[in-house]
Image (cartoon, rainbow, N blue to C red; front, top):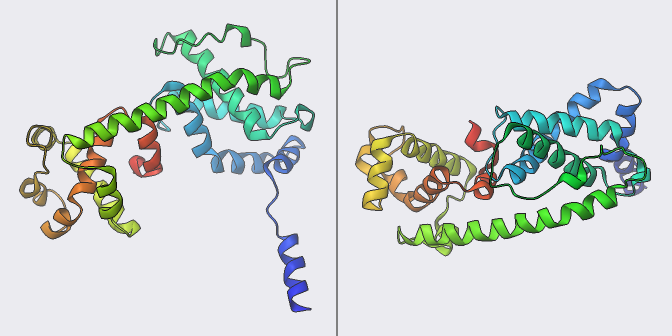
Length: 251
């Protein structure tokens, strides 16, 4: 009996799907809309970053465009489109950001021709499946770009006599230790002196760092390889690896 009650209670407390939330929002629940938009900021940031081919911060204009597009996608979504709201939102966000980029003459390296997608998302007869199919090529480009980035990062690491396997084995095990290491890496990257030393000597300027951070020399040395790797990511144009660090870079 107790197990049955727990099952029924859990079922009642099941979190509503985004599609269900969208219906509530379309019914006029503005407070819920604000909550959903805030919860899905990481999704918007990642989607916008994939278009811009760089890590997007919340202060960027492109991120604001993405939020507006996500808002529109929630309000325009219909089950008749036959796909998930996130698939629909992803397409709308990318199209709106691409339109913004084209109008402002940014990122000339984005060569994909999207002129055949000028119609609005809610044009009659245009289903989300059609939009998604048009988006498949761009997704493949994203996969290729991610693969190229990882290969380039491996090569970059080898210049410092480091490898992925070493990073896995020697990365800090606890979240606090990882955050501390990231903060140390920030100190390196934001200092011309420290960054120049790292690039020229291919090693961490531990003595100089010890004077600038509030951690012991022993801690710096223990996390040396991880700090170097994070410094390389932060100082390079690694959009997907920066996405791995997520909001930690915004602190």
